Image 1: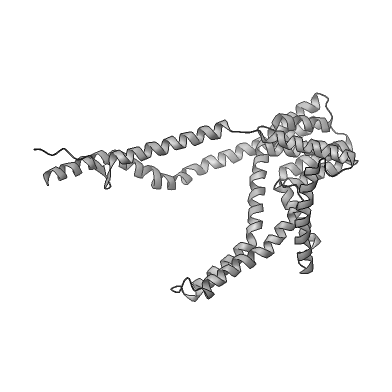
Image 2: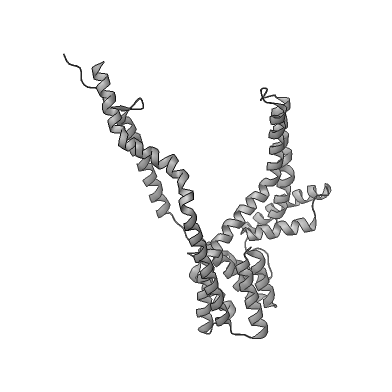
Length: 333
């Protein structure tokens, strides 16, 4: 009786099993993509609602609108007060350091000033926890007896330095990502400001209109413009509102826009023409950055091409031949 031919194999595995696993992985990726596409929410609506509530609170002279929010704020303040008292008792809380942390948090999109105390507290507690844990693991529990003294010291020093720098690195990454998102939408925002200025809208109304129109496409930029429009509405000095915008956004382009707005407010120069020049300049800079990224693309694609594309190509081309050769040798044996 002749035995049935064995199923083709590749790398020691049944090829039908491999195909089933790849199909399941592709199906899972498609389901994840469909879920991500169907559950997209508008982040601007919640932010504008919060900003409007804050505006009403400032007008009414209150700090909270409901008992629930008052309880939340009280709970946060209690935790912050404990951290503040601990840092003050250790004499590590300085006003200049606290102000710098608050500015970094604002540039990262975090409005709560109490979070600055948490960042400073994390800088102090992180090295104690992680560094102390590394010392216990390396020197007390002796988990790495085969390591040289230099490697053990490098592990402990890396844990201490990394724990101290982790909050700053986290904030820096948030600031960089947020600044890039704002920079992408700034030329379009300036074009809309030019249209609003030529249509006869006031500056605060123009900022509010731009925030409403660009909120879905660029929520970070819409958030900043909406907050600037609110500050222009209730601050006595309009220059302060523009300076606050330059402080909250770590971009030289925004500082240039703020300088232009202040000069037009002070000297009465035409706002539309100045913003049109800035918009053309920023759009040219964005095109230059896109061309620079496109010029770097061949060099960047070399590593993925070698690691991921070429092996798959070899498997697709040589895989059937290898399976046929393996089956032929198996039948011959």
